[in-house]
Image (cartoon, rainbow, N blue to C red):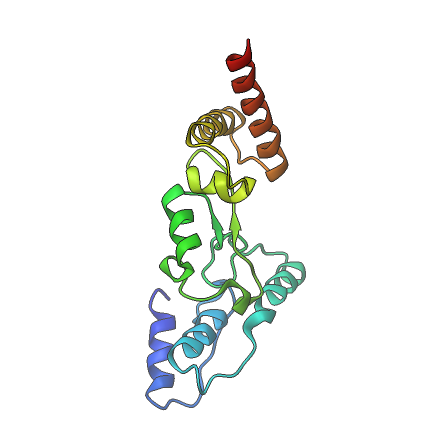
Length: 178
């Protein structure tokens, strides 16, 4: 099972005409979504199928089977394009191919920058979209973000970040003008 996708792809690339597949690792066959993506990446000119339906197919599969698909499942997991780590965010914003072997839209998904205790300065700048934000303000906001995420045990929403940033910036102004 651990090499099923590789074996299936080798067979097809060597001229094999058919294989049996499962879906989302819930069977002892190569996962269909992995085989299809492998073909799309290896034979982009020959493979013309639209894989953007895979996200919908995952949802339908979960609904009909009653079995959840792992959020980190290759190709179709809901969270595989969520990025929190500071260095990953910086890399993805500069060049998505650094951490993404294919465009999220290819499989009906989208990239999401999330804010948590592993976030970095680039995440703050990206989410707040404030080009004039000073280095010290960004550092203070980031410090409070990490503290708050650790206390809550979860990531912060964009709205919570804006509120936090406003609180931190108001505290800084109060300290300066008092």
